[in-house]
Length: 161
Image (cartoon, rainbow, N blue to C red; front, side, top):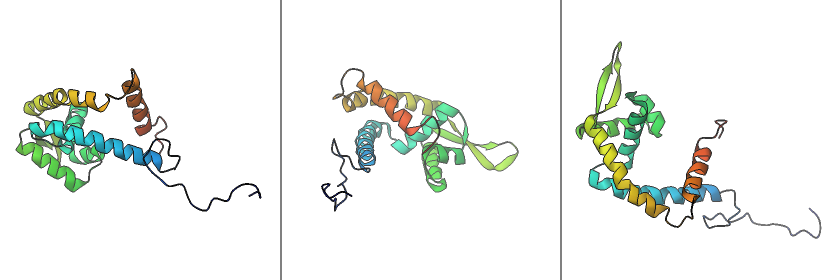
């Protein structure tokens, strides 16, 4: 350290405000953005009788088709007990069914029902105006840019952390 350089005695204060240079700022901003989007989408799903955790499983089932519970847990970031509760809820509502896997009576595959597909489609219709409100402050092309940047951030090409 040189004599004319000021000595820094405290670390940068982490905030989620624009321009924060703290190494924690990105995480805080992502947390705030997630909270805002999740709150809005939860409200869109409420009239349909499901929560985001239910919809997350429906997304995986639509995307992958019938899926074993342990893979649903991994795909949604849930634990074994949590995914069992969600699948129980979906079964009770007639949105998904568990079926035995031939050759392994311990494993069950979860499959979306026709009623689950109808609700999945209805959820998208309900979410469209919410999505538009969430990105209303962005300029032309920025919604697509934000989605692209977040996708690349969440799923890096090298698979790294």
